Image (cartoon, rainbow, N blue to C red; front, side):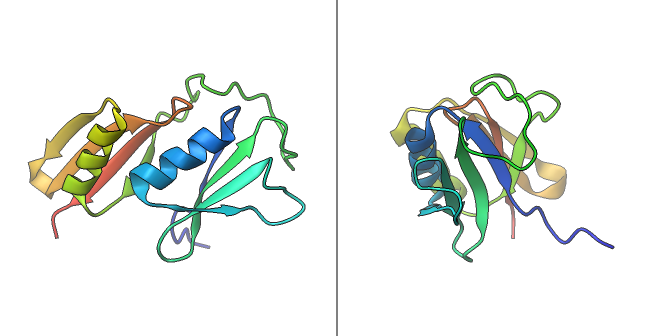
Length: 133
């Protein structure tokens, strides 16, 4: 057994449309309806340019196989952040500015990494990583 890559992140929200619009605007992800039995009103999946649904967005009332208490907008418990390997550092900074979002940047020179930290409408901390290539 081996882990090949992170498959997706699931976000439970009481702001389905706003959250989907955020990920489309900031990361350029494509919004699509989740597959049945989920409905467009309770689940949207955000696809990357490779056709992978890397962010699943579910409404609070969306049925879940493994259900547990979730407080939309609350700190994400033991998960501190979601890190995404990205390209287009300057473009994402421009998008953040255009969206009026707060962000923090960091440079890890030893490994050629520039980082941008921001939060989504649900207070999920995103770490956007840009490696020199």
